[in-house]
Structure formats: C-alpha cells, structure tokens
Length: 474
Image 1 (tube, rainbow, N blue to C red):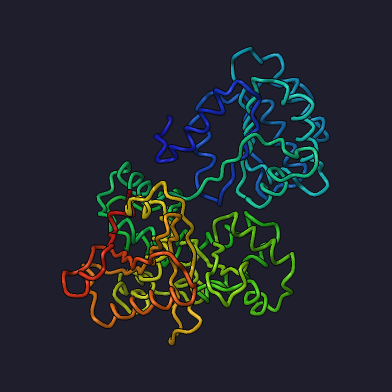
Image 2: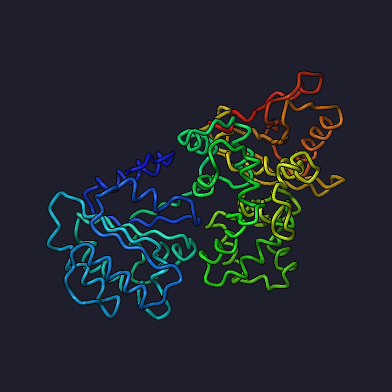
C-alpha cells in the first residue's frame, strides 16, 4: 500500500520535472541515514520502477554481486551470474534494451550505492561505462542512485573526476524535516501534540522521519524520550555507533571530531579542533570536516570580526540527535525515567535554551519569511566579540542586502519571556559592540525570538522586532 509522502514538495516537483524531461537523466540523491531517501523514491514512483537494486550493508564483493543477480532474476533475467561489474552492467543493458519504448520512461533505481563499491571491485568504473556507452544515449532512461554515505556519493559520483565526470544531470540533497513538516507528520499519525511538544521532541531527534516513527501515539514527548533513550532496550541509544559506521568506512576520526565539538557548544575553529585532537591542520582534517558538513552533522559558520582572518570559520555540531546523545546518554547511564523526572532541572533547562537556538538556526528561511524579507538576499553567520567582558557570542546574525542586519537574541521559556532591565541592557550593549567591532554601515535591528513572545513591559516595548515559536512553523 502506497503511503502518503509528508512534506518533500520541492523534491517531488523536481522528480516530476526530471521524469518528464524527455532526456536521459542521471540523478544522485544523498543525505544522512534515516532521512527518508529510499522512502521518497519508492513511494513517489510506486510500481513504475523497471529495475530496483539495493546494496548489501557491510557486504563483501561476492554478496554484492549476488544481490545484483537476484535483482536481475526478479525482473526476468535468465542468464548466468556476472563475474565482474562490467559483465553485470552489460547484462542489465541486455535486460532493459528490449523493454525500452519510445516516449515511456525506463526507471532504474540503485539504492545504497556506496555499499556496492567494495575494494578493487571496479564498480564505479563499470557504472560510468554503463552510462557513457549506452544509458546516456537512451532518452527514456532515468537512472537514480542513492546512498547514506554522503561524502562517498559526493566524491565518487557527483564530483567524480573519471568516467562519471560531469555526468550527473541532477543532484538532490535530502535534509531532515522542518518543524512544519514534522508537525504534518505527527498529525498524519493521529498525534495530539501542541507545537511546544513538537519542538521539544525536535530538539532531541531533529527532523529525522525514522526517529519520529519510533514515538507511540498517546505518549508525551518526555515519556517517548525516556523509552527511546533511557530505557534498558532503548532503540536510539544503540543508533549512535550504527549511524557513523554506516556513513564512514573508518568512523573513528569523525567520532573524535563530533565528540570534541559536543564538548564545545559555541563551536571551534579548525585550528582549535586540530589542537584539541592533537592533529595536523592539513587537508585530511579538512576532508573530515567537509564530510561531516555533507551529512548535516556540523555547520561551518563564518565569523565576522575585524581581528579575525576573513576566511576564518567556527564549526558547530548541529545534529539534534547527536547533541542529545552526547549531552545525556554518552557518558552515564541514567535511570529509565530520567527525562520525565528531570524536566525542570538546571542541566535540562540549559539544554533547552541551547537547543532552541539550534532550532532557530535551522529555520532561517522561516525567520526571513516572518520578517517579511523572504526574497531579500541574506547571509547568516556567527559573531564573537573580541572586546566585551565577559566574552559574548551571537549565534544568529542575518545580514541583509537591503543594508539592514537582524541581530537575533533567542530565548526559550515555557511561557512568555520577561525581558528585564539587565538583559535589555546586555542586548543593547551587544548591538553597540557589534557595530563597533565589525565597523558595519548597515542599520542593526535587535530581534528577539522566543517561544511565546514577551510579557508586556517597559523593556519589551523597546524591542521593535519580536518573533515567536509560531513563526518557525511557517
């Protein structure tokens, strides 16, 4: 039974455009594990896939070849099992050639593509030869390849410098759901959660559809998180190592970087990461950081400061699940009902505040829409003061092409936020220091983003731009 596809409207529009283009198409789809890549393709195309193959996780060359042969047999192939990938793709051509009809799409879907590329197998070369020698010349062919090992997909398929160089006609990076899509998902499953509850769940697992599916209808987010993370057989406690092992053949360097960034929530420069891990700041470290960016684990944030080199950047851990795991699960096994029992503790309240900042940074498009500037070109970045004591950092600056800058202060609370004199003065001090240190000629607007708005009062009235949780669900 075909299930409804939640969200993914832009992606479905793109797939429809590729399907109807009338040209041979080679589409690469990538994104972190559990984000819904396979679900999107299989549900969107339904039974209109002419060949469907899935690589074997951690399989050797023989097992991958067997998987290919069994898929061929399923689609009516009567020949012998191929011994090489060159033979395998030639047999696929033989299978499909008689079935190609003018004006009718022939869809080939190869899932978990990185798994098929075992050492010295020649898989990528054979795939390139299949496309260049035949498939590319068949206007009916639509070849879609998919993989969770995002860095492998980018380096070996999209940015390939061999036979597949510039052969990909389209790439699609599937990101986690937005808050609005998350709400749509839970509503489709009959959940009666309000928006604050949805945000609280999102802070722990992000917009990863598979993680959402593990909640039970009728339980609160707190009870669900107890069961999924803190219980004796909790599913998402075990997910962490599987997640990185599925993405990277040698996961340890990536785990090390993630761990050091988890311990430094404000982020670290590349030099600082190298120093903390006792590594050389060379191309290898750069590759690891880029790989983590591709997989939506970290963000590379430009830093605006006259005293910092122009190309300097702060790397921050942004994957909600990974941050929650490191904050509450990684080093100590808490009691099974830890989350329900500690929802108001200082540690959890601090985490809520930082997590809400990350939610806002993941929804800059929605914030721009709420500000009435959806089509104004902007750049968002981090600012660190080099003179203010104690040191201050603003995690979200929206620098606009119309010569205005929104300096965003983000506050999480379970009710209206009360802006007192001290905090108001801190905000204005940050604004003035930002102007001075960056030497900007733009108008700087202090912008407060809170869950339920501000309690009316003398100081709240001085903040002209105030957004709430509702604006993040646009």
